[in-house]
Each structure stands twice: as structure tokens, then as C-alpha cells.
Image (tube, rainbow, N blue to C red):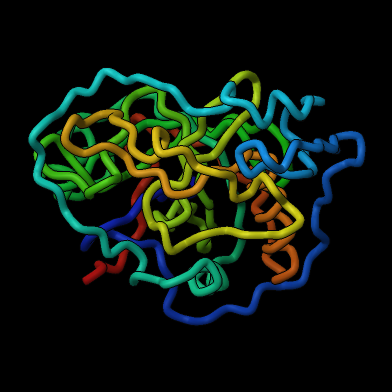
Length: 307
């Protein structure tokens, strides 16, 4: 039997891939990054609040201090928005956790976890989304996207997996500061396994990915209270410039709000180390069964509705 696939970015009275019982994760060997992938970078601390750091894995290259800490690494991007004058909704997301420490308690109920990068390939029409999932809310409040998971940041390796991702928001109403996606946008988010289903289910840990002069940066979308910090990772919480805080993507009157800037290298290192200490089991993408996503074989699992 083919695996059900459920990848959901959740906000405001929408579906949530959660569990009812607390599950203690098994202790398991953690995949460490090879030493050959480590590059040490020392920056002038006076420049953009950027200090010494270690970049780990994923396309790591030696970068001189004046490059990383210069204005060459400030986000400067322009999109062609397709919507305007949409109704803005407030976000309740995953029960309004007040910190990252509180948010990660939600992770413990999942069988396996990973943190991945993915790209939006296309957007389904509301009718197509209903045919694929059997869910009527795609006619009124939610958009279904075809996406490609292309990198597993926990295991520091490329993957190639085509999936459906559902996100609250349509042409007429969207979550404030978290607009609908455009084709071509790249993002990073946690992936979890519940039995035979896979979910992206923590909107508080969703990031936009931008490559700026050959370095990948992760910009945290909204949820300012979920802040990652680690004194040993200077580029986990970088100085976010005022010009980077709000970016118009798909919707003129609903710019995305970025609340924290990190290098993908430091973000993924933090998550690998933190989650391994807690004994989370790593998701194995090689075990995922192929499926025909266009024909509706990928089904949304039963979901609880957030109040």
C-alpha cells in the first residue's frame, strides 16, 4: 500500500497533523556531518553584528570575513505580486507557543523527524485540490501546491521527492505577514512522520530561502517569539536589516514579515544538534514509497481542527 502524504503548513482554524498521545522518542545514532564539510569563518564583529562562526555542510565554501559581513549579504529581491486588497487574518497556528522551547515539545509525538528545503513547482486550482484530497476547504480558504523536496538538512544530503503542500490562504484572504506562495519560491521547514503519513506541520518554523552571493540564508517567516539562539553559532541570529523585515512576494497589501536571519549552515547545525540531544529519530527518505501525486494517491490524513 502506498504511503499517505500529508504536508501541511497550518494557520488559523485549519488542519493540523498532531498526535493525541505523548510518545517518547527512541534513542538513536545521530548522523554527524563529516569533518571535511567544516569551514571556519572569522568576521569583524563590528560589521553587521557578525562574529566568528562555523559553517557546516550543504555547499559550504571558504568565505572571507569581509564578504560575509558586508552589504553584499543583505537581501535585495523583487517579486511580481499577483494579488492585492486581500482580507488579512490573524494566525493562531500551533496553539500559540511562546518560545522555541515550548514549540519543540510538539515534536516529541512524531515517529521520525527531519528538516528540509523545498521549492514550489506549481499551484493547483481549487477544483483540482478537492479532487486530489477530497477536502472542500480548498474551495474557500486554502491553496494546494505541488512542491519538490530537494535537500534533507538533518542528514546533509540531496533528495528528490515531489509532494503536495497545503497552506491556508487564497486570492481573497490570507494570514497577515504570511502570504500565499509564488511558483519558484524556496522554503525550509520541519518534516514529521506519523505512522505512514508525512507532514510539514509547524508554521512557526517555516523559513524563506535566499541565495545571496553563493551563500544560502534562511529568513524566518513571522512568529517573532520563536527565536533560535546559540552563543556558539554567531550566524544563527544575524543582524536583520530594516530593509529585509518586510518583502512583498505574492500580495501587495500582505508583505511577508521576516523576523530572524540565519545562514542555512548555522540553522541546520543548530537543529541537528538540538534535536539529536533530545533523541529524535531521523526520517529516512529512502524508505518513502513512490506515489502518483497527480492522480490523488497522495491523501491528506485525518486532521484535528485548530480553534
